[in-house]
Length: 339
Ligand SMILES: [Zn+2]
Ligand SMILES: [Zn+2]
Image (cartoon, rainbow, N blue to C red; front, top):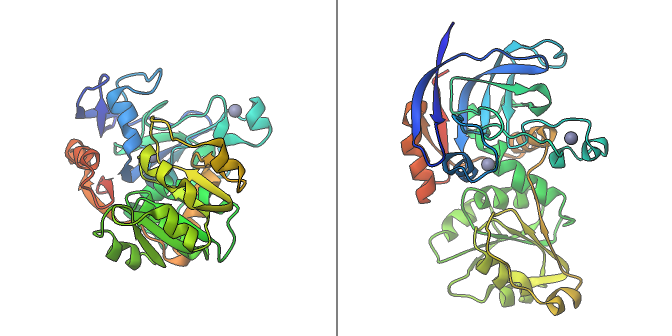
């Protein structure tokens, strides 16, 4: 049987180890992808650290996968070998549960994610269910497309469903892996975009990404500054700090919404009075489906939104993962297979 390289975690908190495995065969309803690039996401820590329930080990992480379909399982009708596709956080749904029956596939009771429920993209090949595939436009390289399958779709999909309209004041809290994409999407969607981060270091980058204004949360009272501008219709919270989120709530205007995509486990502090008086709300947003990923990539190709990446070859996955975890990556790490 033909072999491939894969980077697996053998047990919770085990190291990322390069191993040789059989190349998988696609089951009915699945395709096999010859992986070209796979982004490293902070959520890969769920697999590495065993922080997600019921992961079967050994497991290959990775849910920002781009590659070429090289084999198609029985019953797959809409995809063919040779197509370049991506697979993201939403790696499959059952199509039969009550949520799927309402068309809410991202909230499927049996939703799957590559790298958690089945082996992901830290490998030369992987198999995925056909409903998890998104077509990658020619304008994007596989390396720059990969992070759009998680970091990109999350910010794009949250913003396009946020209720903000062209010209509205939209803040993006945090300029990192998610935020540097959030700023670009907000600008391209026609929002009056305010980038918010700690210190002045990020200001030149925020301006380069198109932000109309920059607020330094260490030197300025962000809530007051946003209020002076009329109050934000939406603040997209990408920073993984509940304290930073708490601090901006009073900067929301009438019907303003704190839209959360940065994952934390600490409580946000807010009083009913803060929410009631201006009909403010707080909402979380979980990525989207494969079609949303396809829309994210198509919009990026169309408008010039690009992920800032650092690449590393597959066999240096452990090092690249450590760099992502250290917060030093600018801004997304992407593994390449050389395919
Ligand atoms: Zn992710
Ligand atoms: Zn379902």
